[in-house]
Image (cartoon, rainbow, N blue to C red; front, side, top):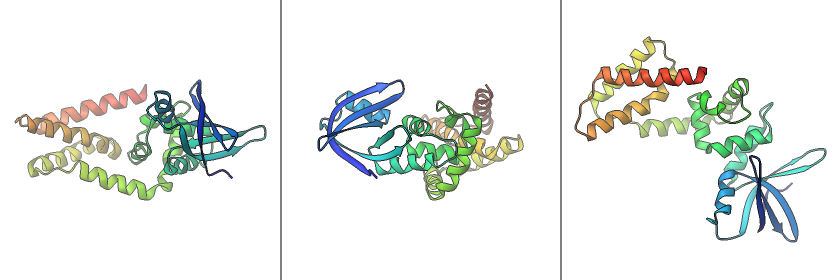
Length: 225
């Protein structure tokens, strides 16, 4: 079992959408697939020290041994959790972490943002639903923390605007928008009210409702396509 590797970077290369490094560790060369973000930092010399350490997930197959390297233990652990989901392979796991941070994935699970998850190559509707269902049960604590963080981030201090946003939620619900759709639009609405307030302008319930409906209707039509 290989937990991590520390050694000298010998070479790095890209094959299609896969990114690799070759590391010399005590005279042995280890070929490791890494995430695109770290690959680009190495390629553009943003990391001056060529002695690097990677957390490793070793996958043994009949005809090959595959090594996947991550800069943090959290990335490795998240990757392993993804691999434990039926039908999800290593390249899907790397594709998810190539495109999004762990917190972005957790937020997408929390809001059931299928559009975002389906944007990863190789993930269709059924796999997306399976990912959301199974990862939601695996990351209960993280989802609760993300929800609390979201509440703090978008806390409304103005009582009048707070009441207006509350009425907006009830109105959207009566118009048959789902709870997750409404939750997804709230940060945009709150930012809009803050922007108007900074400019010394007042907003109205009707303006907020139109903004919310325009965003939601466009978002839903894009998903249908």
